[in-house]
Image (cartoon, rainbow, N blue to C red):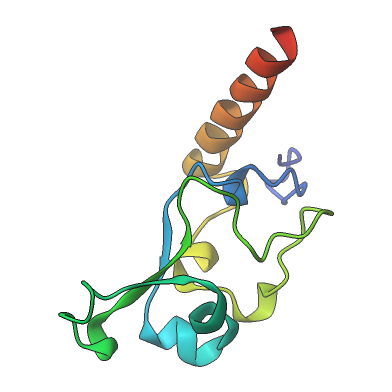
Length: 108
């Protein structure tokens, strides 16, 4: 959720698993826990490690998202996360989808 100035309100929608987030080798070099805790997408060994990616979030909440909706690796987060702008179009769309899902679950 964002305030009127576009600052992150820490709703967690962006990290809740609605988005697919992959990390590359540079991301892993910056944050080694990605390699340790995330799924390596290397085509079962057919893709060289320097071209492989790691699945950080896909259908499930990011493992680095804390219960307080803060990123546990914020300073070293993947480039895809760095490019996600609070209050931007993707943020607002993801937040709307996340809260629509919550409202459906609560309404049932």
